[in-house]
Image (cartoon, rainbow, N blue to C red; front, side, top):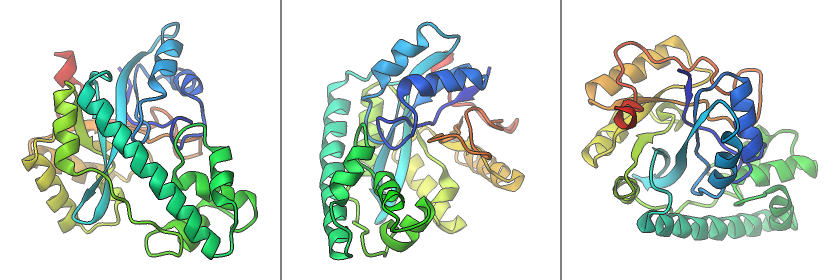
Length: 274
């Protein structure tokens, strides 16, 4: 069975609709898929409808933004009851915080000489407005040549249009997902620009707060990176997840691409398939 438990659609900052996400995952040989849009489950109904007539199992997912030690961290939640009242309330609050942040980013871009950025980003967003939509807008108007340069010049931490996030806490996210009957991982642990010591602190705090797993296998990893994450999962007695973090097709990133778990890992899906 091929699993891909981390991807995004136009419900957040992905480039494909939920239907197109499911269709492409099938084309790439994925058997079990989780759509994990940022702080929203608004794409799940469409994705489920698309999956009904295709040879794929779709499970509920969402990538929850948290603030931990003044750092922006993502937790990937899986296989929960999406109608759970506590979960719905948490995501509604996250949506309000995201909208507030989007407005503040536009205000900062205006001070930097870029007008109508909110409207431009909103035109590119079918769902919630994220920094990725601002980056695409900046490319579209010729302010920068690439999405990467948009973050380096304007949107990244410490840059002129950066707005500090005010997301929920790690404990709130973990408790809410567990109340909804789901499981939760630290998403892409090596992509936060943290030292190995800080990543270990993050995983320690996550384990102590009752977290379930970490993403061990992702696209574009080196063998050493994957083995390191597998060792940490084993050391901290956490389950291991896999995910492409798909937003749009690229040469090095696509559904199910190289998502293999080392043999010493306990797959996260055994928690709901046993």
